[in-house]
Image 1 (cartoon, rainbow, N blue to C red):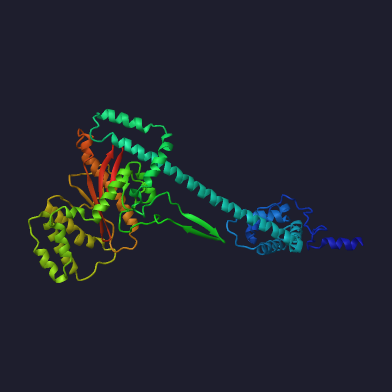
Image 2: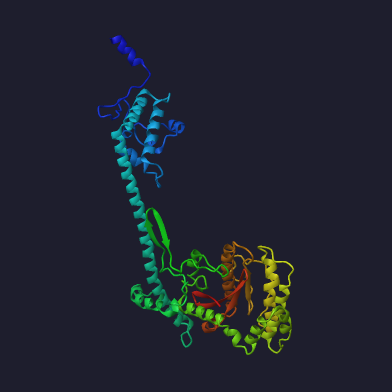
Length: 482
């Protein structure tokens, strides 16, 4: 008997080390043992086994918990995870380089996980960890949305304070101020140091202003008061937006939100695609410009001009040239209309269409003649071709009646990046030129300097947008679309 017993111990096949409850036993294997890195690489052992100590392999709770530590999106069922666990344990037990104690323990763990009772325990812990992960994800989303809502409410109050502060600062430089320059600067600094408690006091009054018809006149005005609404329904996420969100004309100058947040420190900007950060006075000026545009106010102010243009545009192709040529030459603006229309008729006779993305041909043949005719006929504008970019310059050469023109593409579907860059370029060049001009008149009063305007044009596809630059206060420029 002792001899046969000795033969049995010499066998290389590992024996299962389990107790009566079918739970695997470590026997001589240390509980703190972890799989070596070379074995992990060879057998591609998953993290929820390789990162655990050997004593935890037989714990269904710890296995399930470890599986969800690196899982952000549940793709596997508990049955699939169990199959991986059992297959991995059997692979380790059959590996030739592992010790008998490790092979026996892995075989026992695999056997333990195949029993019905232990499988149910693992599934129960798996589903528990899965539910906890879902709850945590929802809590994170709620926390983010709460922070966004808090930031929006803070922004509303802050804008109230900014509106009132701008009014007070602007009043320092209005006509009839009567103070000298040093007194103005001292008072300006005192207003900057006002108590922050004034934010709360002004909130109610600002809310009344925002509800006025002047602010509600534009239903597509972008405002931070209308965040995206979210509804979770049966694992689906539905997003709802107010009409004011993401309404951007592709043929108008546009600024990226991040760029606008930087520029608003020194610039009061109000263009059709970026009105939310503008002050009340600048926004009202912009609205007046847009109203005048729609009603052709500037054309109607010149006697006979508006009627002549309407009559010409209503002509057919055969009569168009004759009516244009017959226009009188006693009015400089009518003369400008005549030359522009003749060039328009000539462009209509072009033998082939412009190529895609061929912005230079369109710019030279269509846009430049318009400004050339206007400048030569009205004697109100002179311009020169300038390809050289004034990179990072604070001052560039400037003269009165200086007009900056940027072409942002033609027949190009992906025009937005070009348009954003050119909008920034125009603002950069516009305030540089204006500052250069103002620096030549250091002794001029601030009331006089505020009357100086500089203009830029941005050509996007077939639309021309005119932007006006001026000084609003010692610390801010005003940029408004005309």
